[in-house]
Structure formats: C-alpha cells, structure tokens
Image (cartoon, rainbow, N blue to C red):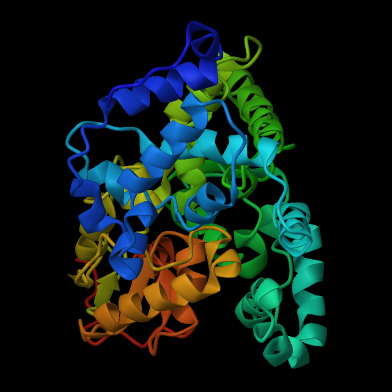
Length: 442
C-alpha cells in the first residue's frame, strides 16, 4: 500500500511503525473471508482491509478520530484471524492498537459510553474490586430488561447477564509464595495469577499448580504482579496498560535475577498474547526495553510449557469426547494450535475440532459487554458448531471464552489444564461427566 506520510510525521516512532505495517498491505482481501465482523455484518469497513483504509486516512492526514472510524474500530474484536490469513505479513494487531490509542487521545465519546468504559477499566483489572462488583450485580439484575431497551445502557445489561450467580472465594494459591515441586525438582516457573480469572474461576490456577508440582516443577506466585494490561490496552488506554506491563516486568525480573525462571506460565491466552508483546510495547522505554524483551521470551501458555516436559503416562484415561475450542488469542495471537490437542489426546480424551474454528466466539475481552448484539450472534454460531460435534465437554484455554460459551452451551465448558490435571492424578473438574473408559496407567 502506497503511503504519503511527511518526514515530520515519521519522526513519531508510533506513526513510523504504523507506516511500515500499512506498506505491507497489498489490498488482496484474503482477510475478509476470516474476519468475524465482516462475515457477520457484510460491511467492507467492518473488515480488516476496510479498517486499514480508515486508519491510514486518519493517521496520514493527522486528524482526530471521528464517529465513523470509532464505530468500525470499536467493532473489531482483535481476534487476529486476519493475521493468520494474511499472505503479506501485515501486523494488524500493532496497527489497530495504535489506532485505538489515537482514538482515546483525540475522540470524545458520548457520556454513557465514556462512563461504562471508565467503569470497566477501574474494576476489571483489580480482583478485589471485580469480586465486589460481581457480588453487587444481583442488585442490578431486576433492571436488565429496562437497560436492554435503552441503546446506551445495553452494555450494562450485558454485564449483568454475564455475571455469575455466585462468586467463588479467593484462592489461597493466588497469594504470593512458592509451591514446592514433588520429588526431584525439574524446573521452576512463575505463574500469572491474573485479574478476572482468579475471581471467576480460581480452580484454573489451582489445577495448574497442582499438576506442575506433581510433575516436579516448582511454581512461584511473585510478589507485586498484577493485571497483564490487556483489558485497558484494547481500550486504547496506553499509559495504564504500560504501567501494568512495567509492574509485571519488575515482579518477574526480581524472580529471574534472584533464583531464576524457566518460564512464566500463563493460563489465560488473552493475557499470554499481551505479555508476549511486552517487548514491543516497551521498546521505546530505555529502562524497560531489555527487561521486557526477556520477560516476553520467557512467557509460555501452560499447554506450550507442558509440551516441553517429558510427561509420564496418565494416571487415568477418561475416554470422554472433547470439543476443543481454540481461543483466538491462542491460535491467531500466539500461533499455538497443536500442543493443546496433542496433550488432551495423550491424556486419553477423544478430541474433536468444531467447524469454523477460526471464527471468534464473541468474547474478546470486554467486547461481549461493549458490543453485545454482534457478540451474541457470534456466540450462537460458535455454540451451534461446538454442539454439532456431539462432544461430552468443551475445552479451551481462555477464561473469556469459557464464560462466553458456557452462557449458551448445553455441555460443560472447562479449561484445558483442568482436564489434564484430572488425567494426571488431580481432581475431576466439577460438572464433567465420569469417564466412559477409565484406564489405569501401566
């Protein structure tokens, strides 16, 4: 794509980076076939190619964002399916991230929209606030029908409908500390506790720590780590996102320098995509660029890390049929496609892949709150394809997908690591049926 940025514009490193990305686009349109919003809405401006044109025009002319570009950028899920499809290597993720930051700086949203976005940014990255908000949600549920009738309040209705009826108590394993390996230590890793996941389903990290320590891996929950920054990063709140990134880089660097780490294990693939991008996000910060790159290199999804271990035979092979839903942040963001399925198959599960597995389920961070209508259409499509597999359960590696799919599916939806923990001697996940063919390891 030909560009015409001025030398003065290109002096801004963010603009210079976006210009390089824009130049790689050859207008081929392959991305439109795999873009969930284009497939759903049929509008060229709701495709990656259409958004690229809008972003180019906005940045090249150095103008503030307007209602049109905000509408179409807000509809982007950041699922990154376009990057998997693109034959030219266009880094749409970095381009749309820059566009969102530009929108946040130059566009004044309507008051209700500003208020809801501010509320999400204030609550979701902080587990204590999020837990309190979920407990208070029952007071707002009677008003869901009223909120759904007012366009500006539909995100509030979506938020209340997604809130669980009960909130688990805080897990002791979420507190800073070290969990010793059983037997001879084979490795040492840090685990990201996260923000939303330990509130909604603390059992995911509990299962991870249980499994890893049984396999001989010491697991540390570092002092001072917090939200990865993904939620606010995708809202264009760049300074808040970078502050979270620096906080985590500091926490993990202390562990790296004091005792050493083989990996930073992440159990929410949305977080993993962002942490693996810390090196890029902090590249212009001389105090953090090198440390952030080191952290990004150590970041591993739990299935990615498990695949590097010499695993024993499973304690039992459940024999259940699992529909594996590959989260967008897993398959498109991190390019992890093989390991989760191979680990499940080796653990004794029969793995099936739903049709249209490349399409997003509609969760996408806060997307199912801020864009509830499009999100609901994608969820219906995703659940229909999952249920068509005839599987007993759904496995996935992202808490957002678990929440989204479970709100409509007629089968249990569990994190992949909980099934692996069960197969290798841990507890059976709640709601999962008994295995059909329990086979003891020889």
